[in-house]
Structure formats: C-alpha cells, structure tokens
Length: 246
Image (cartoon, rainbow, N blue to C red; front, side, top):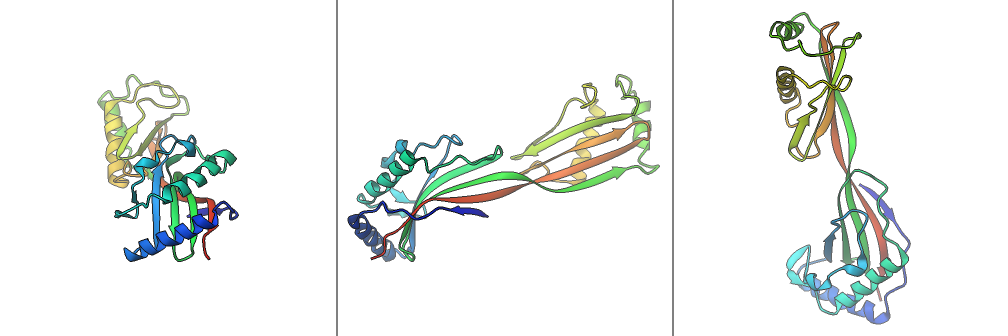
C-alpha cells in the first residue's frame, strides 16, 4: 500500500487536546484504541470538506455502538474547514480510481488526530497467453469455412484480424467488431471466444477483471490469445496530523 505523509500541524487548542484525551478515555472504556469516522467520496476529485453533513456522523465507523461525543464534532469541523481553505486535499493523479474515502481518526495509543485520504485504483497485472497453431487447431478454421461463417468477412491481405475484450465488476464483453475492418463478428466466432475465455481464464470478468485480445491469422490458420488481469492497488495520504499528548 502506497502512503504519502505530510508534516504535522498546530491547529488544536489546549482545550481541544484536553477534550481529545477525554474522548480516548471514553473509547478505552469501550475497549477501543482508536475512533474513526469515514466519508465516501462520491464524485472523484470534488470532495468538499466544507459541505460535510456533520449531523450524520453520530457513531464511530470502527464500532457502530460507540457514539461520537457532541464536543468532538466542532474539533473535526475546525480541521475540515482548515483543510478546505488551504487546499490540502488533492485529487489523485490517476484516471483509474475506483474508490475513495476520507476518514478522521483518533489514535489513542499515539495521542494523534489525523485526517486520511484512502483510494484504490486498477493497474495492469501479469499477462498470459494461449496459442492455437497445431494441425488439430486448424480444424476450427476449416469448420468455419465449411459452415459459411467466413463468407461475409473482408479478411485483409495479411490475414490478421483482432478481437478485443474487457471485463470487470462481474460483467464482461467481447467487442462486436474486428478492430482492423470494423466488420461484425460472426456469432460462431464470438461463441468460440467466450468458450475459450471461460476454459482458460475462468472468472475473467470478476472483481478487478481483465482484458485482452484474440489475434486471428486466417492465412496461417492460427489464433493467439493475449490475456492480462487487472490488479487493484490501494494508496493512503495523510492530509493532516497533529498530536494531542500532554
């Protein structure tokens, strides 16, 4: 997990720090070493700390039976306003963000109050390949030809047609057209591709998913499948951090 940490601040008043120590005694009575409230970032890159609805933050996220003391909200709000005014929250420089949240955390062991930005994103993982080039594999081309599957295909001189696919979040699809010519993929070829994906890379569309391509060489009568899984990575920025120790 990637983590970027910023310098500590000096925003808390002596009264704030005293109150936070009292909150820690309250949390300790419940067997908790820290207390956290969490807010999902619904629209990536547009989180506005000044628009937090603090009336919704009634219980700690790490123990829903633990109520957030009323005196804690003004402290959190003061920190949130400071973050908003000074632009401390930065949008991640990543186009593949799939989840973000912000939390306010009281660490009673370290006597630290922090505001943290968590997010996850997809990256390319390992690639795998399957090749159909044996004599038995060429029978599929002969079958397609004899069944008239290839009649309406405009095959290029080099014989190469590429068919891409993509899947994630329990949903996946194979493109309906070949990349080089734009012709619609015959149903028999599409069905064959789906069957091969399930056979060799079952679950290719689940969770983070995967993507890849089938490369058909109609001159050589070979097929190459290049498959790459997506990997979910997590990152964590500490936007604000301050000690409330005596």
